[in-house]
Image (cartoon, rainbow, N blue to C red; front, side, top):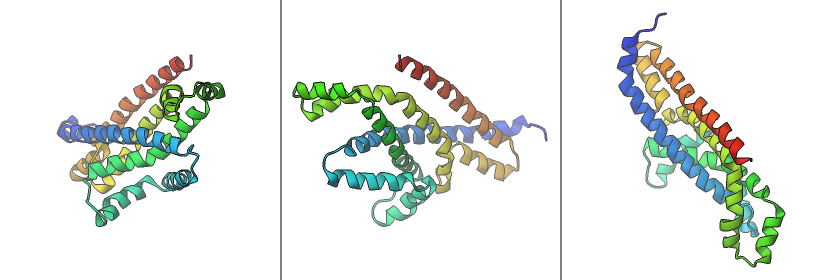
Length: 215
């Protein structure tokens, strides 16, 4: 089976539309995952059980159910209780919520990796808890976990094709639609190459960043 460049040229406008949706979902989902993950990690260390237990149950539930099921729930069930969201917004929220439960574990490891002496020094200086977290603990913890957080961005990129199930046509969704209409394979191949072109340099950059941060 030969490669037909005319099929590639015809697909490119839809490909770039898919790239835009993919990048929007990735950026929005990563932002939610990073912010909420930190919130969950800090909440799980709260002294109050009424804060810890609901967060622990929620994060375990989300972590142990499939992303696709959560996307369907957000898109088809949640609107019956309140305002509906567009497919793209649903995808962003779904990715962000799902991976916030994983980034919370990354943050937890970073927080636990801060030397005990740092906590003791903050206590000796009578720093308020908010000041201890914002000025002493979190800057050290986040610095340690940046490479691991970056790995989840790559994972979210590879999971983005699931958004097509709710109508958010990212790269692969556009390629599948084009291929079904034209009975050709070039669009799928272009998307496969695009994922490699995006993911591999990002993984190399993360390894370089990790080496610099652990010095």
